[in-house]
Length: 131
Image (cartoon, rainbow, N blue to C red; front, side, top):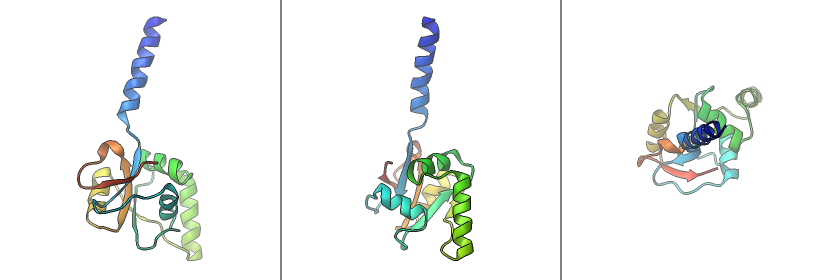
């Protein structure tokens, strides 16, 4: 039993360091962002001067981000954006396929925001929100 508990404790420690958590990123010149502003931006209701990027549907980081920040699942997001497009109220953000592509897109535009796992952050982008 002691060996089992020791292994369980060690595995939980490894699992918690494997993923640092999702963060909202901006260009290195960007200012900080509130959780409320991030939610609005990623649902097309915020600052219209922002260029918002999403990871592709089905991405685990995307699911974690939306669960934490917007409170929506992939299915709910799909339904939300379908309604927005149908009613002419908005279009979904552009998507990128990876953290590397997200960093490149955000780094190249001072008005761009996106999200990645905190472990993927480097000097090309700035963390503007840790939800």
